[in-house]
Image 1: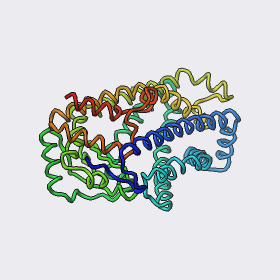
Image 2 (image 1 turned 180 degrees about the vertical axis):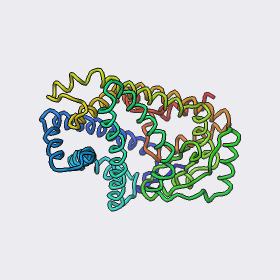
Image 3 (image 1 turned 135 degrees about the vertical axis):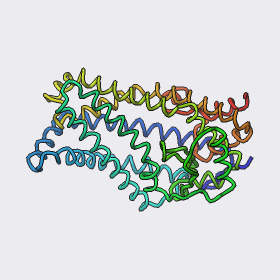
Image 4 (image 1 turned 60 degrees about the vertical axis):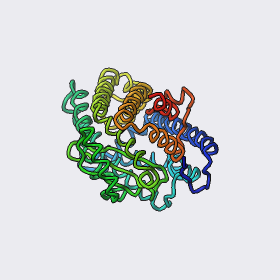
Length: 378
């Protein structure tokens, strides 16, 4: 078996496994630190009364009133970005360069940050603007109306992401390898999966990791291959990767996850509806429809997200296991699956055998060692 080399020149699997452990531990630690840091800032911002002062100042300065929410979101997001900048640049740029997983230039990283920030801001203005509009016009059923709007908007994003968002970050083109393209299309037909076409993206411009996806919804469904995967993996390995992705579609995993996320959104807003009066009282506010209450809503979603994450990960790991079983059964490429998992874990510095607590809280896929053991026993 040949192992993918990285720019640091480490190609021995033992050294890369140890390196993956260190990398993963740092990533998980930084995620925990960032979560605690954001929660602390939100409680401080809300508890100190700065949120109310800011909303009052903006409402005095800015007219018309419909511009209040975009201005408020922009200010708190910009201030948070500045406060979080050291952690952000270390986590997304310095750490990736340190572990030889990225060759992105700092100027390109800054450009991506601008794009990500703009996309996040637009989505936040739409979702939060709709929330506060509905709060004022549907006093007793706002939680249900908002939930339906957020769910609908997430479906639209899923459909548009491959044609609008991904091209903002990567060069998109149809797969140039005609033999591989025909093989993928043949696999899709065999598994009765309709796809628009097979595309490749210049992933290597930013990252040395490898990836593939079956993205989109309806008329935008397509296969996307990173060049870092297309150029380093055999046809058999790529086929079994995509058989796994197609299996998700065949087993309706995306639909089930949409239902789960929809339920989570609805339950979250209902809990806010039933209990926010107590939270508002603690922070000296009288109405959830006051834009100054936005940090409270974010705190609710963060705490509920932390609580729900292990459960969602457990379900996701089950879906991934079923997709592996289906891919192995349909392709029969057991050895290719095993070699692909070995190479992918080393190239992406994935922790192959994490501590059970790490797996419980962070892993939405089964660890690599478990997936390989599954393949060997099939």
